[in-house]
Amino acid sequence: YREAVRLKPRYADALRNLGDALQAQKSFEEAIACYRAAAASEPDNATILNRLAAALLVTGEIDEASKTYEAAIALAPRDVGIQLNHAGVRPFRDGDRRLVQLEEAVAREEEFSEEQRIALHFALGKAHADLGDGERSFHHLTIANAMKRWHVGYDEGETLRYMERVRAAFP
Image (tube, rainbow, N blue to C red):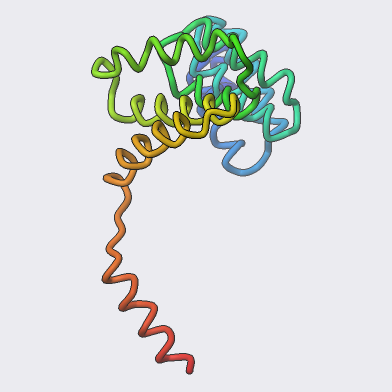
């Protein structure tokens, strides 16, 4: 990616990918610089802003991360994954417009991919928990976890047999 950026310094995809690689290597400040450069090249790219916000969050720039998530949501209001990320940064409060957006989205959730529906219900679970409505929070978290469970390879019987083998090996 560095070579692509060297050849074409404003190539947003290469900058974003380099930022992803740097973030995976825990070079967060360099990743942020790449994401900022990518955002300067493509200011209307919500994906880049989402990744920038995530990197800012890791470095403790919580207020800037929140504002960056808000900018990403303004560009892609139907991307509930970004909304879920933002929910982890800024708690929901009474009258929060984000909750209204999420409630509107759940009314048409059949339009979303399964991944987006999972994020939607996790975000609603977080929202209702923040607002002190444990019952509604639990309802949405149960739905999200049930959908997510289908993507997790877990065999309880096999796990229990494995634990027995470990216990037998280390009496």
